[in-house]
Amino acid sequence: MSYSGNIYVMNWTRKIQRNEECWCGSGKKYKHCHLSADNQLSALGNKGYIIPPRSLIKSPEDIDGIKKSCALTKSILDELNTIIKPGITTNEINDWVHKKTLENNATPAPLNYKGFPKSICTSINEVVCHGIPSEYILKDGDIINVDVTCILNGYYGDSCRMYEVGTISDSAKELIKVTKECLNLSIENIKPYTSINTIGDTIHNHAKKHGYGVVHMFGGHGIGKKFHEEPFVYHCKRREKLMVMMPGMVFTIEPMINEKSADCIILDDDWTAITKDRKLSAQWEHTILITDTGAEILT
Ligand code: MF3
Ligand code: CO
Ligand code: CO
Image (cartoon, rainbow, N blue to C red; front, top):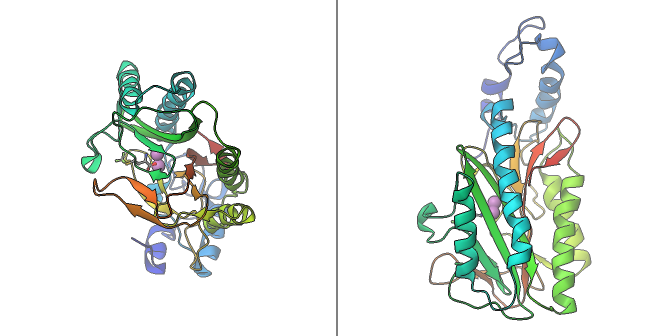
């Protein structure tokens, strides 16, 4: 779905007088609250950028709920550092995360999501994303991505990391490191009231320096009370003008970077995405909140 200039006019330029209460519910006068932000937005809208609908601006209560869910997701990923080692199966990792999630009064979002059969995604070596936990036994030298999404009190927290199994090759180490840098640099470069194009530009530029391919089949996503919502967050450069980032928006950035070609294929299970050339792929993901000055990492 995309947003036209017309929707922009309908959603944002409802006439609020300077001394009226702001539309955001802060209780402040419009002139002391969102007036200048709305003016900046309307200038960007006139330049052709997509203005986020107000439904994507989270309330303080929603932000609090998302933060708690993200904190749980983060703590689970932290603990996996001590659990992932040669000899463990991806089913065992799945079951451990499942149990841990329930113990914390949350549920694992992937389970039964559009028919996904497990509670986490485990993507090993040439698997780009959406790998399904199985009886596969992790072996020395494997690299594995574990993607965890908790639903806590109705709020989603989504994050993934790479884990090294035993001793891995220097080239695998480098791919993991650069992919993490792509994510972190893209977050550091975020400024509110600029477009989401910057994210893909930053990731592209950093990955290309190392000769890597940026996967374009999948992107990050808005998140909150739903797993996937607007905006679609491209990790690659785009010609068209994308959505403007506004304080209160929450979305993920989750670059998948391939050692060589960016091309992927989906296996017959309809989920597992692998590199077409069977070379390695890495991914890191954070859920972030756009703030008045930049972005806050919630996971
Ligand atoms: N956690 C993944 C993401 O980052 C989505 C997994 S969908 C599933 O968006 F069904 F495969 F779990
Ligand atoms: Co995600
Ligand atoms: Co995820």
